[in-house]
Image (cartoon, rainbow, N blue to C red; front, top):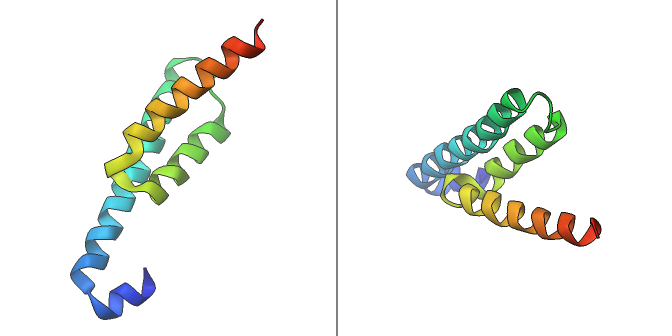
Length: 81
């Protein structure tokens, strides 16, 4: 992203805003679940999803959460047998 700030500043600012919004959405949603579920979710999960939101941006964070939840449910179902 650093070269983008020199070449195309508008695009770099847009990318930065989308990344920060993804960070806030991913981390915020998992932080909410962490608080509501009485520590049913770990703090590492919250940090991991916040970092993931920073990487995949706000455009894709909900899809990542959905597919991650589906894969976790399938894995838990297979290991629970």
